[in-house]
Length: 612
Image 1 (cartoon, rainbow, N blue to C red):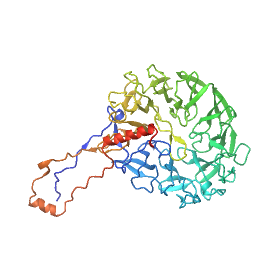
Image 2 (cartoon, rainbow, N blue to C red):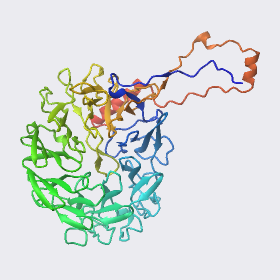
Image 3 (cartoon, rainbow, N blue to C red):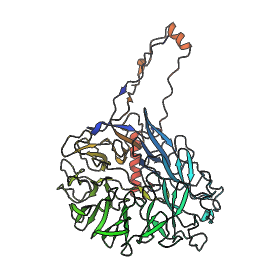
Image 4 (spheres, rainbow, N blue to C red):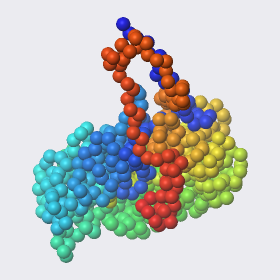
């Protein structure tokens, strides 16, 4: 016989979300409420990777605090959160460590689906170094003991990129061995890294005066499914010419790894390594040639030399000049048929031999918009939409030198200022799209968060200006703009809405899924009852949200005393009804106190005192 319990479970509230949200967005707390007293850290060099899964429902983030089932505790611990039926679940991915092994976060990059991660095995404690009391052990089988290495984490295993089997030429001692990630394909199936060491029979080393090889004369190697191949072999040579670099941290390796663009350490000349053959890129000799980007398959590449923009075709090995007086390149389509660039006359689009003016003036695009691998500008894969920043008044709005976010639609040749104040008030501050994130120690800024959706119909940004009445705190907040007919937007001019709270504290855009269903942001504000305190990652998910329990009001005085138990109740108590569990431990202090702490820490950082 079942007994009815009068003290029913708390009633669930409807999902909470931003005011007047687009697409039925609701907030979901991504990072766990209890973080051992720590915060989620914003993306910054040397910290953990901040990267969202392209398909949605997953994001990697970091914290100086170690929580969960951790194998080690680096200066920046790495976490992966995934959405489940009842909420977000977080896994600690930090590898096992020796004390002092890491000076920064071990992870450098994740694949676009977050199924694979690329990390370093450490730096300061290596076999043979005088300060080491223990060897730096390999993270995975087959790696040379004591050496710094790059590892691919897939599942729970670590696969070394340098092994005793595929690097028979490795002759340097561990204390003299250095390497750095140069770039990788989005799926991490192909990785290019740099080291002055000879790792293949075709590689040459430049000896260093103090022993080992000259760190300023690196070789490039491409790792593909357990094999290494030297990249920087010049046309007609059979051995490497040390002193090379990958042409860009992103966009210089074709998606299948068959084409790699590289150069010398100084600007130009540029080379294409295609299979086992190297080609000199015509017109890239002299005049400070600088690689800009390549198509996804590497068949087309763009570079500048002497202020001229060139288009190189791998099929013909020919370079064509398409523009002069070029100040910078903002981006291109995945197939290379569209390219956006800034000249002294304005921002322009080149497409299949014809040119269109996007916006007039030498300052039409902000310098932060370029280079393509690291800048703020975004281009959709089909090339028809460009998002960029500008301090110029391009659509008539008086932005008084504050950066605003613009979206150009090439299908209708229309430019929209998506962050201009709809009330036409003078902006209180700039609006921003983040550039590429750099993580780990010595890595490249190789990942650009998805501020613009693949279809170009949604864009996310952070604004220091209060663009809507519901943004009332005078602090930066995260916004979404979407075009008519997208999601819930029915306005001809497009729709603007908050993604973050708009009250009581600062928020900044982090990343989004490829279709924009997930929009992640960082905030110090507790937007949900389940968030007790601290800086957290939230997802403003379209049609999302999890039910939040209604807090039970505490009783006072005689109201806390129930009626005296009768015989039947006493009998029931004697046979073991369980009492409710203890409330969960809450780390961190009162929310207002913590916000004061965060502001003070940011003040120290901005004025040179303290690490943040």
